[in-house]
Amino acid sequence: MKKLSLEMLRLTSEDVLGSSQMKSIVGGGSFRCVCYNSKGSWTGTYSDQATAEAAGGGHCESGIAQCTEINQ
Image (cartoon, rainbow, N blue to C red; front, side, top):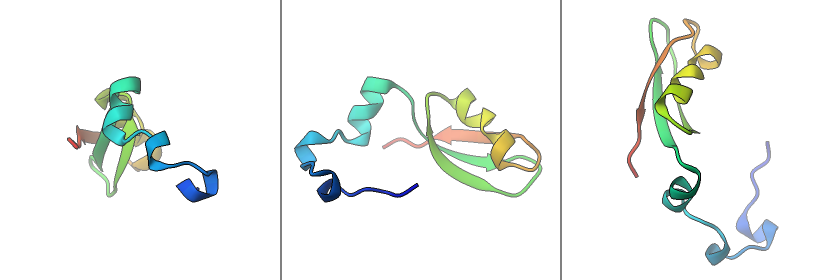
């Protein structure tokens, strides 16, 4: 997926919410996850810890992950 800059979208910084503002609107947050009994780790935005850990099936050979929320 191609990332777009604010200039390409013709948006100013006032038109875009920061991550802490988005979190308060949509819930969830950023999580750092580590695979259990296999190698791998990733960071992602999820609605809650259970959803983040469920993503381990796609990221981890073992299918099991342990995730902690990153406080920003």
